Image (cartoon, one colour):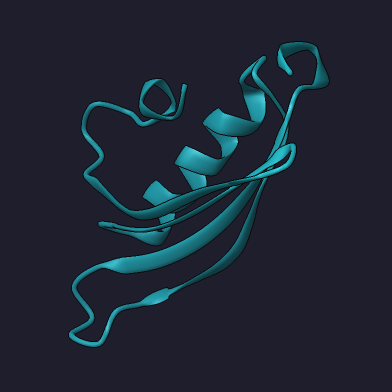
Length: 79
């Protein structure tokens, strides 16, 4: 579901994905703030999740990528 939410032209590197009850926490990097927002919007629109929220996004140390943290709320119907 997460990979389907990422547009083909967007590069994403997921560093960590944790399932915590009915929530999924994702930490990763992508190429821009716009890409991070697009991923969040696509996940939020997915039927598998009740919500997707960007918790943090910032440029990495060399300013070439955007590091992000997001929280997804699983749809209760799939549990």
